[in-house]
Length: 282
DNA sequence: GTCCAGGCTCTTT
DNA sequence: AAAGAGCATGGA
Image (cartoon, rainbow, N blue to C red):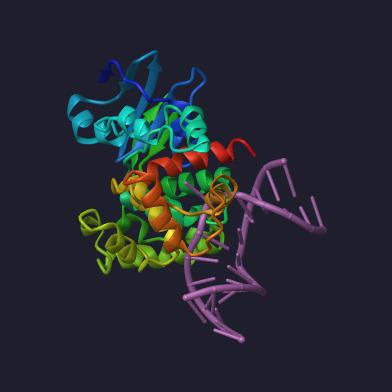
C-alpha cells in the first residue's frame, strides 16, 4: 500500500484538528488514527511523536493534495509567536489548542457544508454530509467492507430535487442547497475565480449564493481559499469578544476591523484557536 | 414537554 | 440600516 511518511512535524494534532469545527468528514479509528475523505481520495493518517504517516497516499497525491490540505507549507511556530503576549486569553487559547491547523479543503464542499452548519449541531451536520455523499458522490473505495464516497461535484448534486435533499436531513436548508447548486452549475458564480479575489470581493461573490451570509462566507474562505484574514463571526465569537475583549459591537464590519487591526493578517487562525478554547471551556 | 445548535432570509420599522 | 420572526431536525 502506498504511504507517505513525514518527519519532524510540529504543531500538528489530529484530534485537535478533527474537533475544531472546520471539517466534518474525519472518522476517528480506535487507535487514534483518522480516516479522511477529501478531494475524491480516502487516506488513513497516523501520528506517532513527530512522525506522521499517510496511508493510501501516493507521492504525486501528497504533492498535489495532502501537503496543502494539511497546510504543511505554513510555519505555525511563526504564526503563534506573533500571537503570543497580546493578551492572556489568546495566550491560553494557543496553548490549549496547540496542534490546530487550518485545513485547505475543497471550496465546493465547504460551501455546502457550511450552508448546512447554520443553526445546526455537529452530529447532524456530519450525518447530512454523509448522506449527500452516499446518494450523489462517486464510490471511491471499499475498505474492510465499508464503502467510502466522495463528496459530489456540483453537476452530480444538481440532479437532486429539493425533496431529495430534504431526505438527507438538511431540514429547511434544502432550498438553499438546491438554489446554490444551480447557481454554481450555471456558472453564475464561478468558484475558480473566487480564489484569486481579494477578501472583500470574494465575500461579496460568495454571498450571491443562497444560504451564504457573512459567517458562512468567511468559513468557506478560511477553510478552502487560504484567506487567513477571514474572521468568521458566530455566536461563540461574539461571546468571546464580549467576555475576553469587552467588545460588544454588533456590526460585523466593525468587528472585522478590530480583528484585523488587533490580531493581524492571520486573524482567522487566531479566531480558530479562540473559538476552540471558549467552546470547550463552557 | 422545552431548549439549543459555528445563521440566513424575509419582512417590518 | 437595524431589528425580529420563522425556519427543520434531533439530541440533551
